[in-house]
Length: 263
Image 1: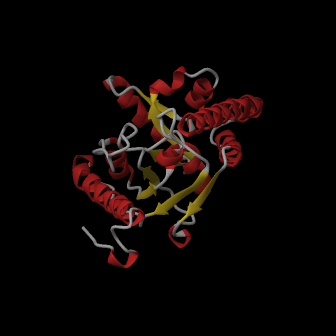
Image 2: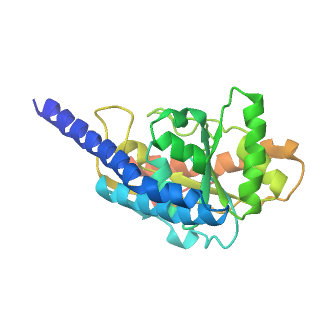
Image 3: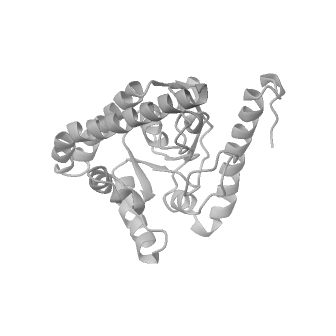
């Protein structure tokens, strides 16, 4: 009986978060349409302010609070970055917008465009890729060029999909690392530690609570041959996997903070 009651509460709460998410998209949409109708990049920078406000309000409404575990490591964003993060949950985008205090466009899957209204706005303000289409992947690099020239940060989830509950990190795809080498932009790794726990795709899992985030040291990139992307990918993957694996051990009580190791 207690389990049934708990599951019912979780489902009702998840429905509330869905309603509030779309409700705020509807409320914000006239202003979003106004800003994106302005000349680029001025319009996008104004849209970015709305987007970060939407993320803040959504997280507050869902009962989530974001905690940057090492605020001294968060860069000032006076530089431009390709920001990469592990992909755990639908919370990843609003949390990324909450912790990155600068204009940011995402490279995401074209499947997101199918959602009513959200899909239209997402398509107009981000870069969507159909990974089954070579032409679409080429177009992404052309679109990205426009944002990079305007000094806008690029956000990518290099796993290409959301991990299962028992996984730490999927293998990374090539796009973010080829892009970094082509443009000479540093990679900024960010790890999300609680997003899946607090908003799982499992209907009966999820809760309000603290969403911990860690910034890892930027990985400097020298503009050069994009064919060298594998070494860069492996370096960033190792940094992120190392941090996530250790944090999982510390959360389970199997490792003390002072026992952290390096790969």
